[in-house]
Amino acid sequence: MIKLNNLTVAYNDNTVISDLTYEFAKGSTAITGSSGIGKTSLINAILSLVPYKGTIESDEKYSVVFQEDRLCPYLTAFKNVRLVCNDKDKITDGFAAMGLSDCMNEKVISLSGGMKRRVAILRAVLADYTTIIMDEPFKGLDADTRLSVMNYVKKMTSGKSVLLVTHDLSEAGFFNCNILNL
Image: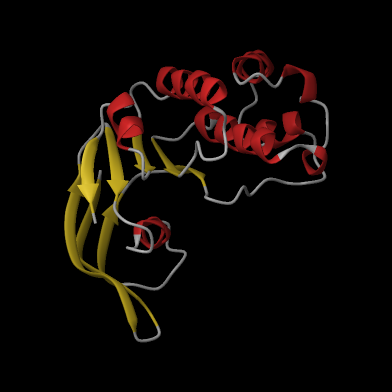
């Protein structure tokens, strides 16, 4: 469970989140709002990546899909996922579900943006953590790929908590999310 108490995030004199108090329920929560409202800043505060005022209470372990993919570019796609999951069969099945079987052994640096995104998502969902934070995870994926990836994520996150930053309310509906609109 994650509890925010009087959370304020500011950059210099620009306050992007002011005095937010919120308790994330178990299950999935979509963080929505207009561009620049502070959705990513909220995630970064929860992850202690930016300074903030107020308190964040949590005993969760997080797996994260950032807006920009943070993969090890000179490792293969398989080895990037292997960093968080030792089950080779589960990894191989995940690559198949993501439509990436043919590029498992390619270095990440040689993959397209959409392929990197799917590797990042796969790594996050296969990590053995109680909460998965995903910041615009499906951006840049074509409609068919997006739907198959979303189906896989839904299957693999059953029983976990998901924080989903999105502009797309249909994604929030797909994952049966509670909504935190900033």
